Length: 308
Ligand code: ASP
Image 1 (cartoon, rainbow, N blue to C red):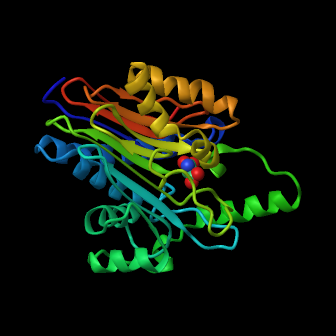
Image 2: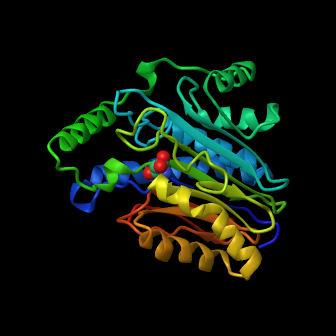
């Protein structure tokens, strides 16, 4: 597959259960995934870089209010939105990430600004906002990020907590967006962005912005973007574990990602999924729950979107 591109995107493993999904909503979701895929493909088909393709795809996902990242991010238990994002360029394993941020329209561009304009990898708070401002990125007010659906989900979750009746509906617990790509030169990149988990404590940071947990890319092995129970992904160092199994045990991407997601994640009490691409352009999209909003495009071979 040398010389061809591959791209995969996800809109989170927090899918609506089949019983609550309507044909209209399913069609709208697949349309949105298709548009995002086309955004990334447009970069790669012009011989653009993997890092530009994942940036473009994740910006499009962040701007789409149906997904939990950027506009449409979930609320913390005290009614705020705190966003996490990370990007990694597999060429020299450079990375940038932000956590607990509110204000930038596209948290993934904030993460990229950390990668490209500072000596650091992970930034929070005022320092991170200063980097975003210096990079000239767009800021938005609270009403831009607000969606009634996410607000209602917070109220339902808090009510269930008060009544001691918290369910494990994945569409309430999960959500995140991400993209991985291999460009025509063979370079890999990964990007992940999230509002985190509904009703999380203020200051809680998940796996998405932690390099090696929810996001990882190394041209020698693979690029990974994860979605699911962040605390379990953090403890298992999911994304790096997959790269390590490929590098040290000679496993294929499919074997390594399948072993971590289909065996280890559940054994550790977690649910979710991930998207991955290896240095030859092979794509994998495993999940251990009801579904994962996802799309994939392997140049000249295969293209599609799916939910369940
Ligand atoms: N992994 C994300 C987090 O823990 C949430 C998700 O992907 O569902 O913040």
